[in-house]
Length: 567
Image (cartoon, rainbow, N blue to C red; front, side, top):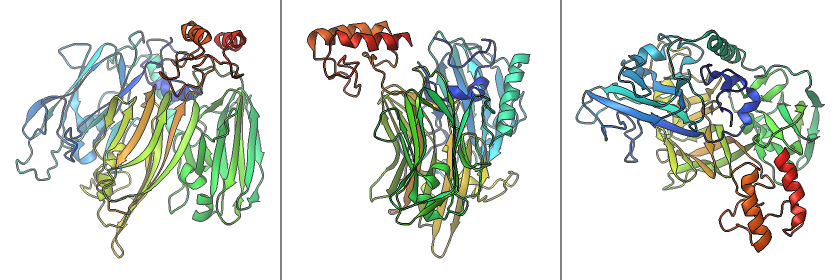
């Protein structure tokens, strides 16, 4: 297997930069990769999500050397985040590589997160709505140890600016993956890779892969969609990759944006992989500003845009359905796609909308529950509470992977790279958007609308975060949650979660996501016994060996198997 970090690049390149610029690979299966998060979350499940470490255990209130995390490589730290106020306290940041006793990174949080350390600078390091984040990839070939020094806190548990909130998002890769550890110096090739990412972030709103001379562009003219009707936008035979989706609704009100739904079907599936209201999918309407982020936005030349790659093997259908009670005017739609081969490691983009009114005793809003194999790439989350207090932002984000591992965050706004209620409290006056910003837009995260007021009491926060490099792979199951226990009963929670999922592969009899000679044994067992392995893998539709779908397992199933094996 080739490195998931390096795509057509020399192994000496700093891992990570090409992960952003190799646009098609955003959809590629992350074989053998494991995501993790070293954070200050409260290990007891309560809300003291600060000054907690891998060791020593428990809430630390004295000046104490602490270990944030010990990681066995190869791997990459993709994201380091702290609240701006906390970062300004100058917490020690020390990273030890490959068992060395001398740290290669030895600095402070305020130096690193203000772009004053080594080549760590904007746009991969930025300040955002009460938070500060570094997206410089920090690679380690064998091991990484992250250490800090805790600062003293009041023994009575009172609030203090020395509360140490932090998150380090990382990915571990299988041992054969060639990863060169961070050295502090960029080679010319590495400088070129970083320059490409800088240009990508600077050109946000344009297609991440640039223009394509072989792409085919389909347009649908302005028209009105009657209540209950559907409008086909594209019906394509594969294989290929949809490069972009656009919908223009220039004069649409919020009811129009909620009623018109974007639907995407792959291959022969009768159930859409995407079925989301246009407003929720793109983050449009409801006093939100026009914005541009890396994969999604509302301020494109063709209207609302989606640049997530959508690979498909046999077919893809894109349409708009009016689920409302009134006609909706659509001012134009575009699908641009590139025909060509798509191998089995390319996954299909999915999106799901979930809406909750918080019930008494409810602890979590569920953004996503999925089974299969793929990777999670982010969400939009819209929250409203009839309360002046931003208590709804106290909840932690939680991602459960394969029923075994969890990634635990430290607060809702922290998950979106903000801090201290998006700089509405613990205010840092030197931020780009200033105190109490209504919106703040970045390539990988943003707030689309934040406000609170009395009479009647109301608080609202609409936000997004995309996980391009720091995606979360899963091989069996995935659950994405956010705590809503600190919001009032009746608070409104709406989310749109995005993930890539590998479609079922005829011939993948051992359910490992590939068709190869390892599938021979289950096939032969199924051929002999006619019982298959359904009890072991109930979600894998091809496990009974019936690869041609004729209802029986016999030697006629050999041909599709061999054809798929040769792809």
